[in-house]
Length: 181
Image (cartoon, rainbow, N blue to C red; front, side, top):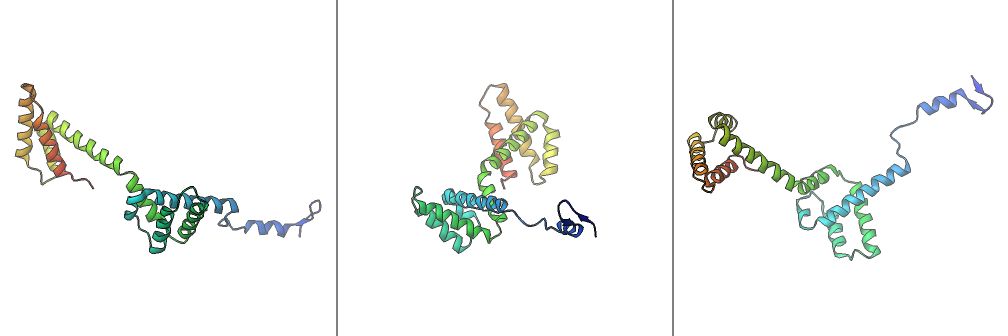
């Protein structure tokens, strides 16, 4: 067996290092994960009324309600957040994080939907029959005659410098066709 005389280490000692388990977490990694769970718990506490849309069990709900009642300047609030983090360690937090993301991104989703409807309206008013055919291909329940009526009325209103009521009506009809998720 080869021996490294300078260090007094045998070759078989090096082979044991190859078997080192990569799944073992360092103390720092465990602490970072725990602090992330505490932050998640504090985010749930601060969400207030929206937290009823988050899938939480009874023990976690009780801990969160208690944290809400505790004055935030007290040390007991910090300990309660730590306790919530400890409870979260034993649970699958992926559905909780997903629900929080949905709640936080609700405004962005609504804006994206609104812009999609505006693009359809502009496209229909600009390209008329081509855009109406594309819309009907995507939404077969769309009424072709109704869409053409909105286009004709919008053109007349634009020529007469009247308020764009037909354009607004077209937008409302598109909102009916494409309900927000």
